[in-house]
Amino acid sequence: MEDSPYHLQRLHCSVKNYDWGLPGRVSEVARLHALNSGSRFRAEDPYAELWIGTHDSGPSFLASNGVSLKSWISDNPDVLGEQVLLKWGADLPFLFKVLSVGKALSIQAHPDKELARILHKLHPDLYKDGNHKPEMALAITNFEALCGFITLKELKGVLHSIPEIVELIGATNTNLVLQTNDHDGEEKVKSVLKAVFTDLMSASKERVTDAVNRLKTRLLKENEVRQLTDKEQLVLRLEGQYPSDVGVIAAFFLNLVKLNPGEALFLGANEPHAYLSGECVECMATSDNVVRAGLTPKLRDVQTLCSMLTYKQGSPEILHGVSLNPYVNKYTPPFEEFEIDRCILPQGETVVFPAVPGPSIFLVTVGEGNMNTGSPEGHIVTEGNVLFAAANTEISVTSASELHLYRTAVNSKVFQAS
Image (cartoon, rainbow, N blue to C red; front, side, top):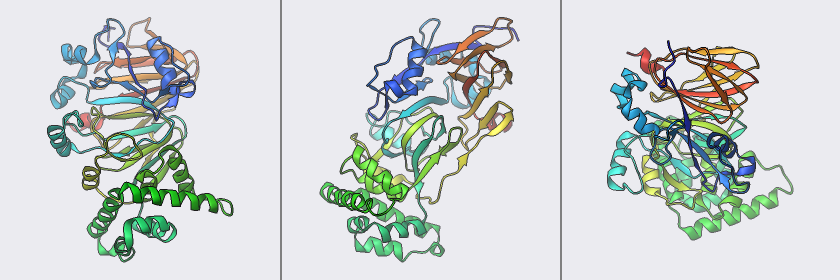
């Protein structure tokens, strides 16, 4: 295939300085954005997210002429490939990010398509688009998150060992949980969990502040005579970041998940989660809809959050990726919009990404090399480079030094199904 300007486009990307980000001097987002844009970062300012894609809240631009990727795709829809164009229209169906998490993000969930449409219609100032936002986080460093509800058995253990929660939710709710068993059926368990969690999240500010303060005092005292559990240590950390916040208590209801580099977790619609620490690449459907209810100074929508959650229980699935060749692992979530390839290419090696019927985006995080779509000279790529690859383009990458790159694309299952 002969090289054409459409096959590979270098992109300049947007950065977000949310206050939960890591300070510039230690943030991968700050480093990559500075390399990507040729700008400098401020050492002490927080750098939270690098956005790569077409979302209006953080658009990417073609390096060659400054045109937005969104308008360039709109003018050249063939770069998406026929199936993507038919299914999603003349826009990229996924949004790719890098996150540098210094302190916890809010306890949140993302609406499904139906709820997203309703929320967008009712509150367009808060919910800025009508799309769902399933997502997947792939750890670059050790990464921690709260994700999904713990099991009924674990929740009973929490009520036996954390008196401050019992006082906050009251005797009726506590007994409701303790008297419920898994053989009562999944729907009964979910309804009990929903009632209890909704009461917890709706508790008055004064009662929450009192409970959090008493919990903190007790744990600090007990820490002198015993090793605190991981969850108890986390709760003290969260209290330091968000004093008197109901999210500090809510953390006991959710699974604490620890990812090693190269492990991923995916989050469907209406599942509660909060990223806690570490750095990751993240991919999602093109949306920025978030319903928040704790660990945040931002607007909370407790009733919407508590009514939308699925209340499924148990630990989330952790993806290790499937090896495509010695250098590339593919992470495929159960969502049509996206998948991620992680490539670690030793010095002097070559790897080929076969042509696929949809668009791809490549991000280089470490090292340098050459990216080639068929022409002899190719494109020199270095860390911080981001490249859009058109549909039906075979890409070959050769490393000059050990090269780390991530590729996001439409989920290949979409093309297999047709």
